[in-house]
Amino acid sequence: MGPSPPAPLPKGRGESNHRGCALIAMRRWSVRHARGLEATYRILERVFVALDPLWRRLGYQRIEAPAAAVERTVKGLLFDCQMCGQCVLSSTGMSCPMNCPKNLRNGPCGGVRANGNCEVRPEMPCVWVLAVEGSRRMRDGQAAISFVQPPVDRRLQGRSSWLAVAREHAGSPR
Image (cartoon, rainbow, N blue to C red; front, side, top):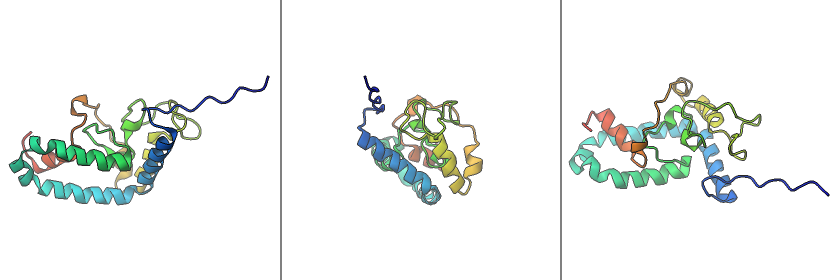
């Protein structure tokens, strides 16, 4: 009897291999362009903070759903964003740590493969290998990636981190 055929690669989150490859390609693109995305984010952050009077007038609660929908679309395309509500892309080289199958937010697990891929999903590059690569391209990336992130507050899942940052920086009450 000949050798058995190789086992199929795990797909994770129900995506097809083609969709999975496209998401990984987009993640790699975002990491390669981390510096430009960082600059774009800083501009958008200033715009969102400057719009705080409008957000307060309309009501943060009222604009949460449409803002989260736009954020989900944009960040979903660029970063395969999982909408944790506590975005740390600017601290992780534009690689979303919530894409780690273990949801590790402060560095890789001990199972990163020799080729830099994930131990749980071998076809996927470790998000933390990408994070280190992206942080090297960013202006303050080396310092930012060493900052210890707090645990994820699951109550914020699906909420707009853009609005949360605008509210925090503008000093608006919660």
